[in-house]
Amino acid sequence: MSEAALLSPPWGELTPVTAETIRQRVREAGVVGAGGAGFPTHVKLQAQVEIFLVNAAECEPMLKVDQQLMAQQAARLVRGVLYGMTATGATEGIIALKEKYRAAIAALTPLLPAQIRLHILPDVYPAGDEVITIWMATGRRVPPAALPVTVGVVVNNVQTVLNIARAVEQQYPVTRRTLTVNGAVRHPVTVTVPLGISLREVLELAGGATSDHPAFINGGPMMGGLLPSLDSPVTKTTGGLLVLPKSHSLIQRRLQDDRTVLSIARTVCEQCKLCTDLCPRHLIGHELSPHLLVRAVNYQNVATPQTLLSALTCSECNVCESVACPTGISPMRINRLLKAELRASGARYNGPLREADEMARYRLIPVKRLVTKLGLHDWYQDAPLEECDITPSQVVLPLRQHIGVPAIPCVKEGEIVTRGQRIADVPEGALGVPLHASIDGIIASVTDKAITVVRG
Image 1 (cartoon, rainbow, N blue to C red):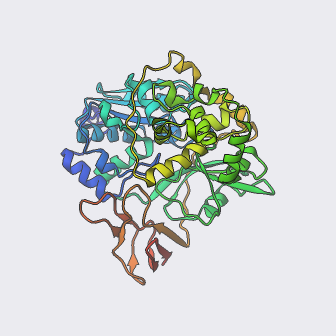
Image 2 (cartoon, rainbow, N blue to C red):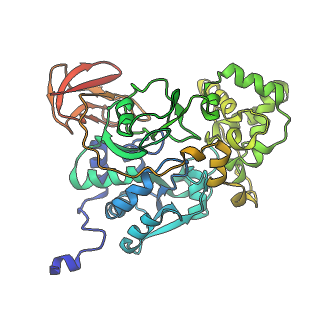
Image 3 (cartoon, one colour):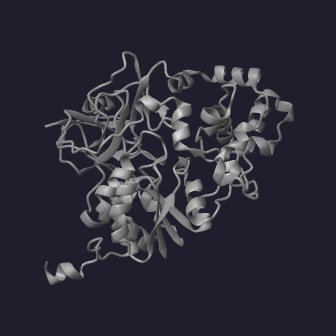
């Protein structure tokens, strides 16, 4: 081994860059939050905080991406944290992951510099709700309707931090997404695919569905949305592809229309309060009380404005529907309807942060119990990370894959493009990020919704 290699830090050499350069390269690479709604990452990196936190809990059953990427790309993850700390001025980096991710812990531990530590989380749900992650990893509680920056923390998930490192070191844009394909499939797998590939093609990588009447969820079984079509493209925020029989309760619940949800609530709610007793946000001191919101829907004259406004703080973790309620009500769906009305009217919530419930840590849901409750034992299986050399015949790249304004096309039909080439941009100062071609090819169509690239 050379003398230079002996002197190199175990996580690899950092690219010497300023905080402003990090933010600029992250913006130009089109990096957005890969674990949630897709908030532009360069904007997050403008905050000046004390702690840069990597949310690596991945607590949704059946999803395997982050735990495998941490084990495979541990050094790059550490470098990404260090770049994030430089950009935000953070003095401490924390990677919060579950004890059962032993391969990731083993890979990361010998690489950690003094300013970064691992925080080992219990195997509970929803440890991956960023408000809960912050509380468990730091002891700090984010007030209702506030952002983590208010308590001196910036949170990013594993793929986002890896994309930060690539953007800084390689100045190469986000053109790929790693996701798990699991459930009623022949070959559960975690793969990295070009953005814009159809979920139908992704399903084929897992050998197709094994159910005669399959249904599909984008994301995890708790918070993922029902997919109306597998023609939908993979985006920067695609959480995973789960396949279940259409008869499964998780699918049937998602097929209920809003009118049915409200009718059930009006008919069978017994105000047992279990939904509130198990609500993670309520447990850490938020005013949110799902049973009162259900009561407000049933008896509008007893609802206070403050009670209704507290719906805006619901994280939609789905504990109230899938675990707590004994009579089949969905307080989460009711909260979602209320949130839509309140946001349309421009309403804001400014409620108190109360004392945390002394039983809070013991009322989070063990994942093993959650799997049983959801009826997922038959599909709770490994999905190993595999190399995937696939170039689809075409990709459809939505212009809006993140919170903020959609990107504006800067190419025309018939143009030849190469992978990584910018094909859409956002105005200077607007909340958004540019979009890049994920394959070499020809621009087949440009609309106000998406750009289609066909393989040349």
